[in-house]
Image (tube, rainbow, N blue to C red; front, side):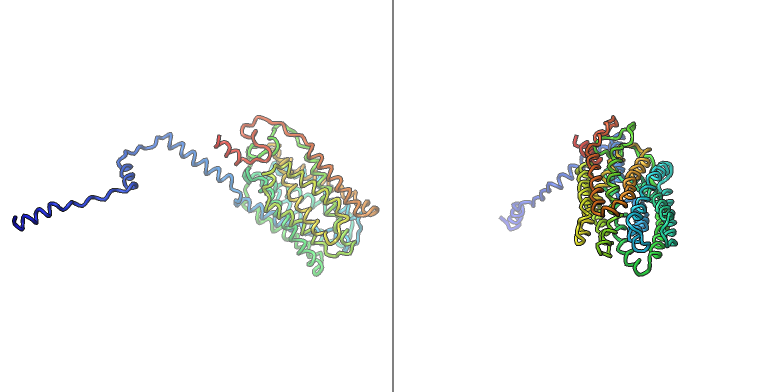
Amino acid sequence: MSQSNRATESRAQVPEPEEPKASTGRRFRALVAKTPRVAPTARETHEYREARDHREAQDHMDRLWTPELFRVLGAAAMWGFAHACFVLLPKYLALELGVGPREIGRTMGAFGLASVPVAALAGWLVDRRPPRIALAAGSILLALSAVGFGVSDTFGSHIYALRALQALANALVVTAVGVAVVEIAPSSRLSQAIGLTGATMLGMNAVAPIVVEPLAATAGWDTIFMISALVAIGSLAFLVGMRTPRGKPPHELPAADGVIDDDAGFPFGYATVSAASGVAFGTVMAFQQPLSLAAGRADVSGFLSAFAIGALGLRLFAGSLPDRIGRRRAAAGALAVYAVATATLGVTPLALMNAMGFLLGLSHGLFFPALNVLMLSRVPTRRRGRTLGVFTGSFHFGVAITALLGPVAATAGYPTVFALAGAICALGLFALLGAPETTVSSLGPCSALHDGRSARDERASGRKG
């Protein structure tokens, strides 16, 4: 065989190289590429867009931190500081104007007494006008009252008139802030939003005494009152451009232990509870400072700051607790602590006074948002302002009873006054536990909202079903 024939045969015996096998992913992509594509039908496209829009709308509804809420918090913070400059008013009355427990009790009680009729007026205004109108009016009235205190150097009937003016300012602002938050915040986070708003104002109650007490000792009380007026006017800047949606459907407000009954009357049982807690709060705010001053303690701002820090801390770190465990249960437990702490405050050693203030602040911070939503969850939209106004008025009616406790403090001593206020607060606890349930009405999805469950939980259970 010739050499050329052998070379040809050897080349013929060399196997051809095999093509590499395609990977699984490559084969799948090739198969998909060969599969004819089917365009979605118009109905499928419409359903997809509806589902996407619904998800986006729901995410927007569940968003808590919005520019409108920041405006409300800013206005509430500045107004809260201006108002908190007067938490040391009992000390001012005792040391600067030289009055006793009778006058102090009447002065502090005048605020609560005037709040009863003006609360209904504030609710009526907020139901008919945007909340920013009431916020602006409340800021201006507080500034005017602060100027009045600044130019006054004697005790007289004009002090009661200035306190009445402050009561009107407080009713307007508290009612407007509460209704604005209900209109702005998502239903599933309503208790948290109300708690945050209250915490903002309470935070100023923690800051103001620390600033006011040493500044008053060096610059005088007239300077404090002028600062209060300027800060109150400054809060008007946050009201520029504020918009709150009106007419939120009633079922978007989550009911707590029942549902909204459009035909139901005002829950007067909860108003009684609010009034009983007002007695305890008013007694603590009016007579704790004279109690400490009589015992030889000149620094009284620590108790007030501890109270505010306790309420603020609970609302910031456990603001959703009423939504999780049930608002009635949260309010009852907090009110029980409130009653016991108030009753024993008169015999508390000075070394533990600030700790007692912190405990009272914790119970205050848990109780009021829970009771607030318990009341608002039972009324339709058109009556929220009036309901919140009556809630505020009933609380300050309890504060007004402080005026009757001044003579008791002058004759029987401060421990007797605190024990009596704690007993009245305990009666409010029994009223809370015995308050009737709201009759369930047929309002569709709303009938499932009870015992603190949020709207988000309801949507989740609906998806599972």
